View 1: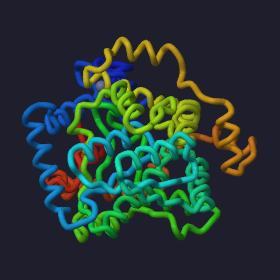
View 2 (view 1 turned 30 degrees about the vertical axis):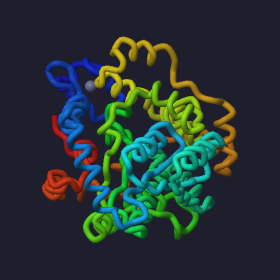
View 3 (view 1 turned 180 degrees about the vertical axis):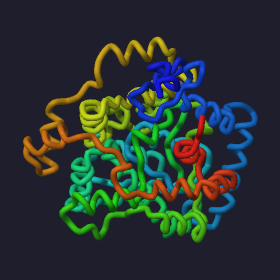
Length: 382
Ligand SMILES: [Zn+2]
């Protein structure tokens, strides 16, 4: 094993062996850097990339011309989704903004969503989670002792966006992930799908789930092939300098920053700044730093210095707030933090089936049904 992992840290980015499935080549470069290069080729920021974008925009406008909206965009009040909304409107699209409220919005997030959709003149649809159900799912994932404990939110967002797109007869759902800014999330850090969600809830949940918007293979098939909905990685087409963007959003959309990547949600803030680093030794800042290095926004030296300078800072009061909101005792929380770490491999998931379906997913990837980032994440072999 050691022969394949001669280095602790990738010689190009800052991913390291806290990522269990990391593999380094003879030059010490990780597989995620290579995925980044493939994505660069697919979404170049040059004349060809611009041509591809114009083609995509024309297609979206044409497909949706008889509709009230031509695309659905999920908004969280964060930098990425607010900027995506701004770009879509600037490009002449008619988006419907959709927000999934899981009960953990910061006040700033709520105001950001209201201000930006108002200023841009965009309709907003908000889906509010059944709090008791949602809390039960979040607790189940904490009790399952896995690093994927934030997936109830991610799964629900995915489901809600597609559900609304299907109802509104919209064929394009935009996702805000940008590989140049956010990096590529290793499967061993975050694995996400509906069967996993169900099996964790079955084992650790206490309530019956009736309204939670889940995603199953069946619903994915329905949205893709019956309703013909495509997921578009819209942000990959654009130059995106976060600092400049924050300025622009503040000036033009009455938007405000909330202090950390995805910290617009208080649960995500707790999850990334406390739960993951303390329990799993996972520092998600590395994803962003690695992306910045690969995109030439930051040097590797700068990133390593920042990571070494301080551990992921966390807000003590927020931990108390999370414990109280989840309705558990401090002892129960400590039990969760101290329980033996597990992974999605310890629970029934679609994962074995995904491996078997690889040839079909490869075809879907080639035909544009399966986004590159998803295909690479699960199947890229260095
Ligand atoms: Zn790397």
